[in-house]
Length: 243
Image (cartoon, rainbow, N blue to C red; front, side, top):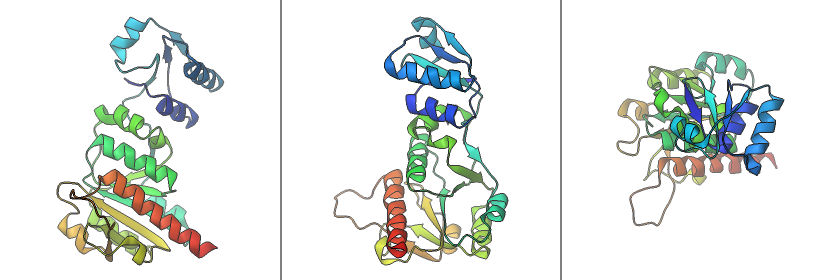
């Protein structure tokens, strides 16, 4: 078992109907009371515990903690099912993560995906359950809402996406600015690790590369910040076209 302690993470897990409980409460501040009401409304058992006991179970608690199973409560789907359910939709947005292993970055990326309406996050490797609480808290609960899929072979997955009418764009520092690239229609953006970037074989499958112009003195943006900027640009372009 593990415990969620962030207010946002607990609230969104309860709202997503994937919580198991009980909800442990040691302090009854205004925010905690609101979460308790939500838990009761969703028939999650409430247990009052001492502050010392709660600190032992969930050291970073804010007076409450939600007990959950050893997973991150994410909205899982297979890539195959996603493509089947896509139907005739002309606009879909996928974020492909190539070796994004830091749970803080992953959680922050999920938060961006929720805010900018990403339809699917596709990754390569199963994340370790020990990072589930970090991901849930960093994503502010977005992990419970953003559809995520995994594949053993991202290169093959991009080929499947191309067959389904997706254009694949990789993010790269020195690439043409994203605002000069048409990001309408079915689009998949590929983000690589901060250390090595997008792997060679996956980069070769990209239809083009997009960058974020900058005037800073350090090498690049954090990958989660870059994700937010690029996803915003996709939505900006699509809003302009819709007007």
